[in-house]
Amino acid sequence: MDKPPVKGDYNFFDNVFEVVKLIPYGRATSYGAIANYLGSRGSARMVGWAMNASHHSPDPVPAHRVVNRNGMLTGKHHFCSPDLMQQLLESEGAIVENDRIVNFREIFWDPAREIGF
DNA sequence: GGTGTGACCAGCT
DNA sequence: AAGCTGGCCACAC
Image (cartoon, rainbow, N blue to C red; front, side):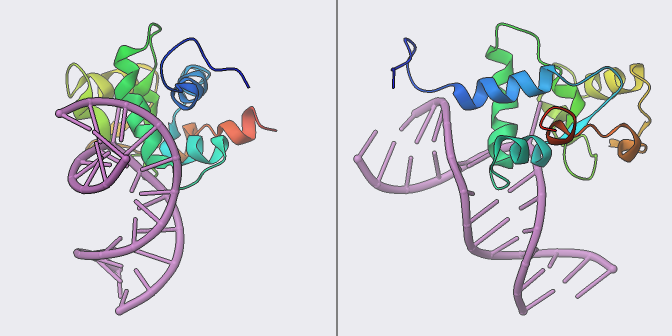
């Protein structure tokens, strides 16, 4: 009912940022999980888009904790360094091999299950 | 204002 | 079994 003082509606992006920032240490989630939490399964692409905008976000967004459904570091190329994402994940205890999180299933963090519930 | 793209996912062939 | 296409919504030109 009120128009936001800022141009456009960054609600979607902000929502994604909030969820990503809520990811605990040593955990990872997938784009689809966040999209599903937001209420749209098909909006998974928007989540990835939001990550791209995370660089414009005033607060640091642990985008390295967000990977695709297969646990593959598809967006590693979008970081300052392509190895930065893997380094961060490994630094948090995740086992990354061949650009893929081996124990992704173990560290998987579902917002709809942790927060939504 | 329309078109294209995009760090995806799921279904169909 | 694997590969391709469609679909979804928001942003940039």
